[in-house]
Amino acid sequence: PAPAPVAPAPAPAPVAAAPVEKPAPRREPPAAPKPVKAAPAPVKGALTLGAPVMRGNQLVLPISGVKKVERHFTLKGPDRVVVDLAANSYSGPTELKGKGPISRIRVGNRPGGVRLVLDVLSARLASTYKVTGSNGSVSVAVASR
Image (cartoon, rainbow, N blue to C red; front, side, top):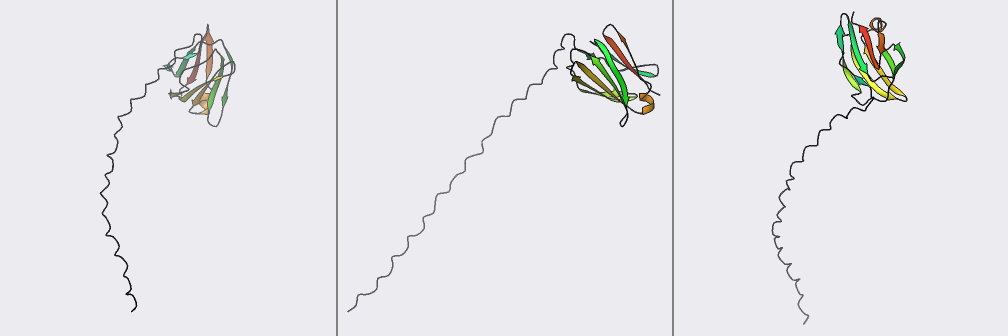
């Protein structure tokens, strides 16, 4: 007689895997606040700007630490007064909020000195500017009307 067919062995029952525990999220300590950078110490002989002040109908911007005024002129579109000053350097803010007829004041170092740009509200007001000074101090005045 022929041997009886052998039935395949039953597949082993699947073993349930033990649940894998996810590690608890790591809580990083809060980052330490970044130190606030102090304003750079003024450089000896460096140009410094005073606060703009109204004198009569003019806004006057006092400036100290100037060796000499090299040149000054106006530009249009937008209307500006540009003043090139011979000075050692400038290390203050590069943009300041204006006042009265001046909407913004920009300052930057350039070879041999510092450039001051006053954004003025109109060409008519820009045409009224005056640059005066002596003994290392300069004033730039712009009429407010």
